[in-house]
Length: 316
Image (cartoon, rainbow, N blue to C red):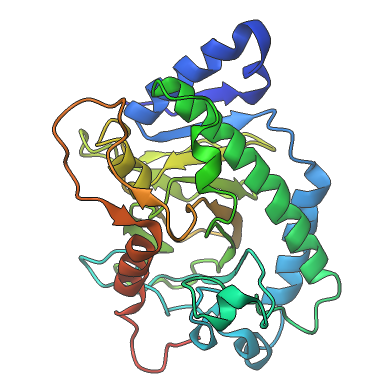
């Protein structure tokens, strides 16, 4: 049975730096999941996000719909329960609600005026004081961590340590908070989040400790529970990084079961700059498995599949 390793980010320095890189590479080629502790993100930033997210999700539905993701062409805003289906095969709608924000652009920014993909303003709720401040601070801190983790990725793959920095200076990375309501009289087949692989490079997930996240390595038939370590991030490989590494790294399916009590999580999806060309890295082995693609084209392709299965009346 595959186990999910726990990596100590504090060792990514000095004499133990290569130990972290080696452990990262083994996890990325195996379960595609790891738990990263001692990451340096201030716990107060995490607590603030949970607090503001709780306040937002407690608002009346009409208030939350004022910032509906349906109003944004840039994947920002509120997605209501039953508005997404991550399991594209079954089409079963996810029993969760979520709010997305990303790098913020003023409405008069030339990139916004040109209609560049995923360049737009965030939609901030009006009735949660301090929401924008908390989310913006957390976004910056976790983006910095994610970029630094890509230094370990580069070293593991035989690249210059700073190789990936050029691809994340204006990234499409998304901060998403999620609330899974408790399963009260659940219907057969209901799921918190259907089986899926993540779209981007890596995902950094912070949870409240409530169980539910499971992963199924591609070489196994059974789902395994992802462990919770207080204050640590669950980090997993996304499809775009698997594509970039020509399947050297593995993006494995995962899901969230309906929880017995409310479950909250904070996901940070690392996506490169819109016009980053994702193609086989020069240091990875094998014949090329995937044609080159721009990062924004790949993200649009994946988001379209997720939201195309909305059922009438379920839009956020």
